[in-house]
Length: 187
Image (tube, rainbow, N blue to C red):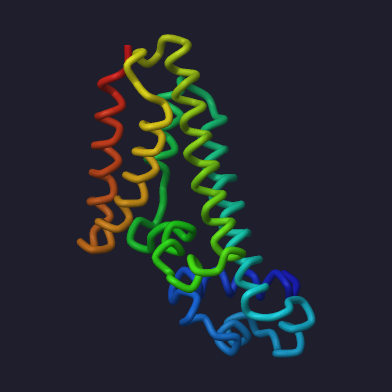
């Protein structure tokens, strides 16, 4: 891994663990093993590096989600695979946690990849749900956009509840509940 990649990887980890304010240039340099000159050779400053790290986390989230959404099976099976895939519920979502960071949310550039990722995720789920409704897999009473929004909200809320309870089981129960609500629409 080259220096630029080590800087991005270290910043991603630190943002996930500490948030934007808690991620200092010095801590990034220490974690990555890169010097100050290297950091400023590759990035204009902390904000530029944070944007690269947030964008990378967002890309990876979309890639993992698309692997499930584009996989085999019915729409409900693919959504189930996405919601039940292995994840560290106690650490939380590396993109979702950024919504609780006031410095990230206050900066339009840093906020953009977060907002775009959740917009993409909601739209992708809504498209799948609409496809399932059209094919007859799901009943016509299901609202794809509202249901997709609820699924994203339950997923993110599941992380919050799991962290509060210090139990990954709480996240799993939230996913089971969401899938139970979706199952009520299966034909």
